[in-house]
Length: 281
Image (cartoon, rainbow, N blue to C red; front, side, top):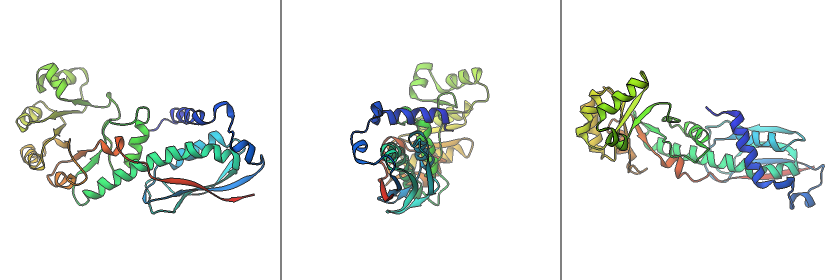
C-alpha cells in the first residue's frame, strides 16, 4: 500500500525542513566528527507501535557514514512506557540530525495505531469492525491507513477510484439513489458501491438499486438495529457520524458490520516517544 519512492521523497522533504544548507549550528560545534553513539527510541507512555521501518528509512537518508540496527520491535506491538522500540549505533552527529524527523513519523503513526486500538478494544467481542475514512492528513493517507491496520482497524477506500460512495450531495444532484447507482454501474460495471442514507425509509431503495453497502449516517443505535433487521444480511451496513468512544459499543451491538471513525486519523494525538543516547565512544 505504501509506495517506497513516494515515501522517500516525503522523508527527504521532512529532513530538508531541518537541515537547510546542511548546517546544524548546535550539533556541528559541539559533537566531534568521529564520535559514535548508541541511541534508543524509547516510549514515554503505553501504546501501539507503528512506523519502525519508516524511522529506519530516515536513518538511511541521513546516516551516510553507516549505522547498525541493534534491536527493534515489529509494528503492531502493544508496549508500555520506557520500552526501547528501536536501538541503533551511528555517528552521533548524524543521529542527532535524524532524530526529530524519525520521531515525527514514528510518534504520529504510533498515535494513530494507539487510538485505533482503543476503539477496537471498546467493541471487542462483537462482529463489528472499526473502519477509517478519508479524513486524513494531506499527503499522509497511505501512511495513516497503514497505521490504522497496525492498530487492529480496517481500511475503507484509499481513493475515489477504488469504489463508489454515493453521499447526500451526489444523490441530491442526480435526483435519487437508483439513477445514481445506475449511472456508476453503466460506466464502471462490477465496482463496489456504497450509498449514504440518513433515513431508514431510504434503505429499501438502496437495496433494490443493487448497492453492496449502506452507510447509516447519524443514526441512533436503535435505528441501526432496525436497519440490520430490515436488511437481513442482503448488504453490508456501516454506522457513521456522531459516534464516540463511549457510545461505540452500543453501535457495535446493533449488528452493523462496520463503524466509521474519522477521529482515529484526524484527531489522534501522537504517542510520546523520545530518543535517548545511552552510550558514546
